[in-house]
Image (cartoon, rainbow, N blue to C red; front, side, top):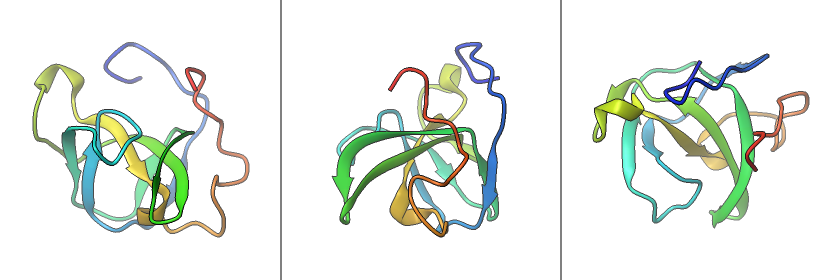
Length: 98
């Protein structure tokens, strides 16, 4: 369950490149958390701004809170940082608020 109380039915575990988790699915969005460890889990995906040739962003909870403790580091990581055979990852649910 995320910071808003939203529950999820499944997740994806995969390797990633550590980096910034953003509050929105845009590269200009404020950093809310940091991913420090790999592998990690993702609960859904949505389309956002283009980041290195891809507009897919994955929703997850960062390992470290940077700002807004209430949000508990929940946010988006661009697909370029997620090691998956294709994006969006087959079988991972599109975020319901997309």
